[in-house]
Image 1 (cartoon, helix red, strand yellow):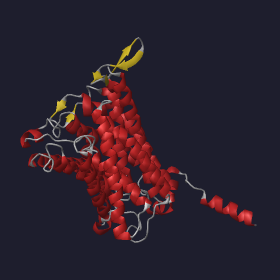
Image 2 (image 1 turned 90 degrees about the vertical axis):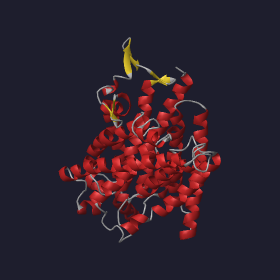
Image 3 (image 1 turned 30 degrees about the vertical axis):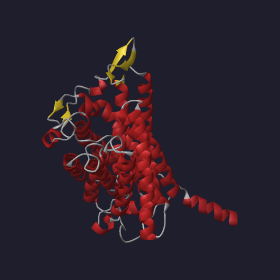
Image 4 (image 1 turned 120 degrees about the vertical axis):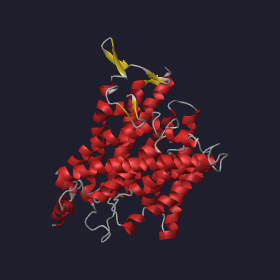
Length: 427
């Protein structure tokens, strides 16, 4: 075991864990004041439920179990992490070493990936869903969607570089840190649920503005910081690839933020803080699958393209009439798809513009398409089942009054108490 690699991977796991609180503040600032606690709780629920499900059987389905059809592993091999831990003199330790660090650290790292992926979905459902239904959804989605998708892409399954798709096309499919597994997967799931549960009251008819833009910026900064664990940690060691992933991630994100801002300025006349935060996240999303295989120049070009496309894509919900509350589809779906496909153009030695040929683009398009279809079908089954049994939405009256009071029985801000105190002082 290399203690330096072990320390880096533990640090990376902790950084990725921070991303879920980061997304909670990013999303929380975007909603109205009457829904922020519910928004924060959806991320908290993602952390808690995923931690339990992943420990029981999620890890086994994704990484430990024997391969079943290239789609998932059996849930028994690593049930309760029995493949990854052992007891030595009454103390639990790692049962094996993965690369140059203990396998138990790999469990920790992959747990945090599952947490952030399902938490991303919540942004599309803001201000109208029940926390109880969400918790059941998280358990089912991690089991039947996320864990199999991680297996397919990152455990030599159907969509991996050694899978049937790559072999048929003659090029190695590439998803460094989650363009398909995390971002396309979460965005498609978000869109499917939105289409099932419907729009917020007043969507498209009245302004629905963020209540705390500084929270949004704070969340974006935390996400950028955590993303160093997400991307550089996906090198699985303290090595040159990790260092370069840090650099390419930062370069692409900077370019995306700038070009989102330029697009806003041309369209609306302002560089907005909301746009800066969203542009950061768009760049982080887009570079995720490609951080280790694109040059510094192409990383910035990739980020710039993603910044423009995601900025434009976020307006589509108003034209097409779906209420993706916080632009999960526009940022994560379009950004993840952009990064995944652009490997086919910019991937060093394999992309069309970087010394390669059409095969890399073909394989990237195929894995993206299959990820979309798989996520869409599995999520639709889960979401319809929950709609028919538990129901997704609070009542219309509860939505108008605020999902925080209806579902959490709390409010984030005591506006009435503050107003009463002011009036008392004035008297």
